[in-house]
Length: 437
Image (cartoon, rainbow, N blue to C red; front, side, top):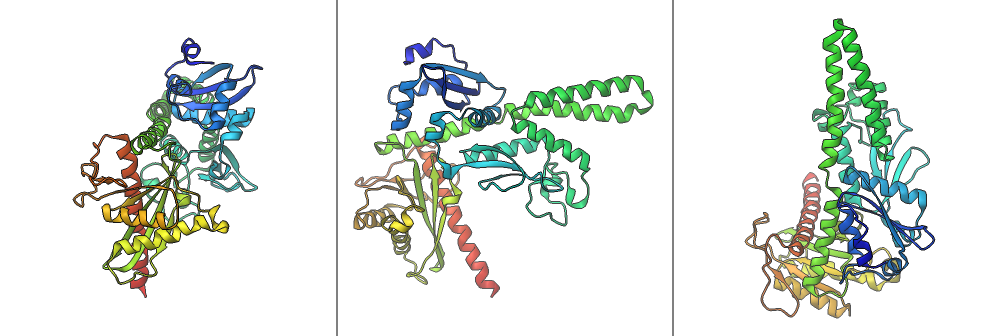
């Protein structure tokens, strides 16, 4: 198919899933989108940066179908359920097994938990797999606004903040009713299976029954009115909360940020793996370094690494500390035993100015590594959204000041701020251990 034919398909701009079919009417790929029309068109737009596998896929597409959903979350869940059912060739070929994540309901426990995991045990109910961690996190947060559930691995002695804000029934202090909680878990399971309409139908049926009871039994009117109000609230809540959960839109924004960054840097391809580095120390004491990783525009916390500075302790030379952690990290690329677990970065972002960037470039040159690197200064020490950060490039004397609404600036700043946060967290941990001794 070509773009002219696709334009005649009248694809809606609503959230949902799209299906690419080959000449034998077999589904070869299933995708999700916040805006079906925009997403499908993107595959055939001029300048689309496709991998060889994706390009091969587009040449085999003979028909396009779609299914609209009421919300972005439902599109995410529908995609996972349909991929599991149809096992399309290109969904299998394009996915990265290392990044698969599931939502688990621990039905083997007395009070089942709902949480995300990468590990499949021999008990419980699993939903997925999903490839986008941030989307799963936001999905669970959204579900929790509708149905309160337990997520703690070990039952605490006292109720926590989740109970106080109405997002956990409080089974740790016996506030929860087992029958009511099982009903909640059942509804969450149905929702994750993509059966929201079944939930609504069942709740509407109960609501009609309660209203009839209310008409027939005036003696218990107050109690029945309370039940009716709770059901009405829940039904209104489901659609209202789901409608405003822009999960796929956020994912599209992250992907757009990385695309704009590639254009800004003149990179031949979109950087799939971005690494950010920072140093945290007080006058050289308890000096540490951090490495954070963003994959396809989102934080990939399983890939984070922390470094305890070995050679520069009790010194205040930040650039020497940076040199140490970069050499230790980049050495992993040269070592066959560790290269698999420390993948090749497409871009390095350093928290610092020209001096820090020069150190980075010298290390890369010394190790004969062709990796793009930039640095971003802290401005005037202000990390707020209004700070005017400067971005330094190799072989460019003057720094770049990007507008605060620049997509490329968003991703650079997110990586820098996350590296800074992670470094400070590790530094504080070491300091607290030191003073406890």
